[in-house]
Length: 139
Image (tube, rainbow, N blue to C red; front, side, top):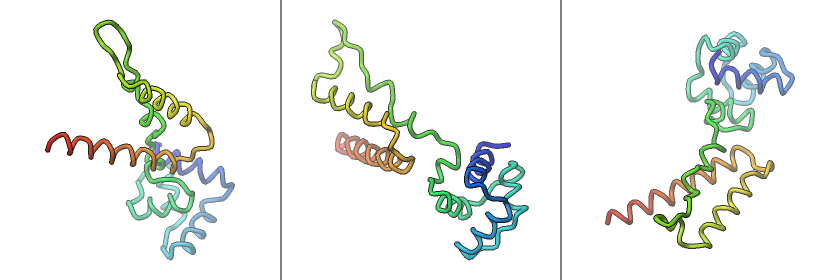
């Protein structure tokens, strides 16, 4: 079984519904024609859903497509390279406000109230800022 199949099955079991019930609900909600056997093949890893179906499943389960694909965003958001050791040859992060901001953000991400969608949004914002910074440096 692949990771997407495992996640899909866990989500369905968590909702306490059968494959038949899931196919009925998806078909009614999204006006598609998904069969129980299609869903079963996805859960067992015998086939994978096309992107449009993956998006529908993400909407249905209220998760992201990245979550369904098995990406762990929490680990991607907090990286070890933010913590630079201070020694005589390396001054580390010069701005103490920057270090305290990083420490505050790290503590904030440890809060269990964040959803995967929240973390994805934060990650996207950080990526945009980083990309703009690199573009500005190139000019």
